[in-house]
Image 1: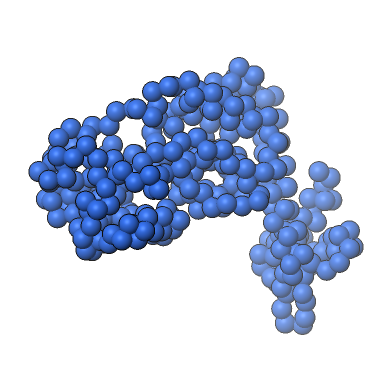
Image 2 (image 1 turned 180 degrees about the vertical axis):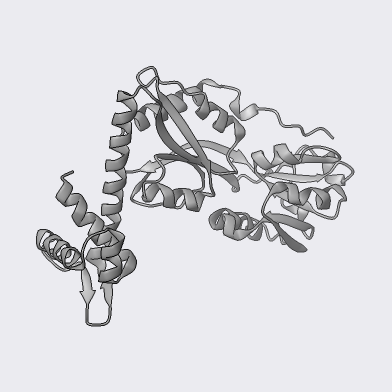
Length: 311
């Protein structure tokens, strides 16, 4: 990327963020006339205006929003390219940024972290945890290279590969009559007090549970919301509620008087995907995906991995 192109991008991004020429100029440490010239030069290159201007305000138009979105990515990837080259020259680790949902099966996370690529001996995986909606946002803005996400929102800008399809689980007290069953249905928890994660943490997944229950004509007597499985533990232990969990949460809950059973509802499954930007042609990303898929497929007992569901 030529230095002049970088300056034009930086000027447009600053003006888009500040919507004020003087503040934008200070932000990129140039004079206001120079920032004005950079914006004019850029609009000449793209063939039309990127901003709506009048005497009192500056606003982005649709073309400007499209340009700024891609300009941010271009600058980010340019900086990462420099960092990668310097890492090789200095013989230090090359970071690869992966996000995962906190609902991800621990098996998938451990498999990912065990990946070793002979072609990239200095590769270092940087793992971050966020909810799926935020993971998609970070992929699109270039903060992440790859993500493991549960039921991610669909987008033509993303490529998705399904890597797991698992049941939900119901946590209950060991003294609960439900604990005598090998599996639980929606009918078994009809009218009970349900503990669910807050909808804002994963709206599509939350709606999936309630829509599946509605199709069975099943309703909770009351819904209590939590942000982490541990918050549900005391209410489940004293038999005042049952909790809806994914496998990661079930592993945390099954202890000290609480047990879990799979929810036997074929229309309600948790699908997990490897997600990347559709325009990500990184060889490292391709190698990680291929290696990950191969390693998970080699574990023939994956779907039968035991959970502590003793009565």
